[in-house]
Length: 248
Ligand code: HPA
Image (cartoon, rainbow, N blue to C red; front, side, top):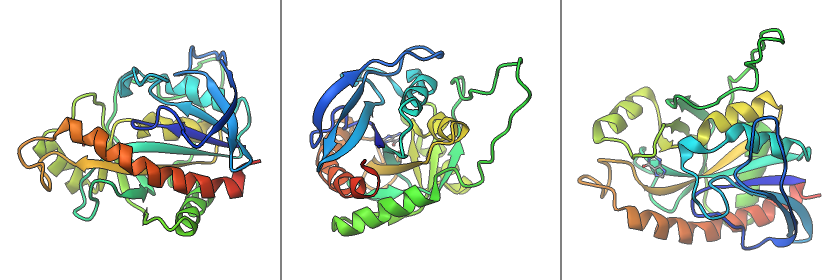
């Protein structure tokens, strides 16, 4: 069964025919909300809203460990995360979709690992390629079948939030090699790897990053949600094709 984590702009998945909701208990506390089970195009999927069903949990307060643990408990075939980002690279314009292939983590003070129990031996994970390559490829193919433009690859900078960045911070992220910036990509991707989940992300460009494009002076926050609303039509279209690979 394909698992989908919905981000900002996707607290619900409107193309999902819901069959039931289940609250999962985890050793790490409460997930952001119940798991929602249902069908897309007759394929079973499970959905979790990262920021809660009412979009009330800010990025730094999301219980990423509980969320991934809950999803892992139903042993999904793959996990697709949808995440809003600001575009740093010039061609990443509001409304576009990207399947990132790399991450730089700038977050702090988040519960970022399952391997901090000193009763077990020290455990490391390989994270050279932070996203599952096959899941990425399937997303790109699904987008092609859905006739949606999607960019293959890019470096996702994960910042702490909830404030947006300064223009100088964006310049620094670009010097570091980042193409887009968001607040939820980490520790989500690393926890997924620790659980050996086949995880990849559809990043949706909600705005030009601070100081870029038309946002030289400020980022118009209202517009972010309007952009996300319309971009979600394309995201759903991709997901509706993605279920053909993983939806049972
Ligand atoms: N910065 C960080 N996170 C974001 C942005 C941004 O500009 N847009 C959407 N999520």
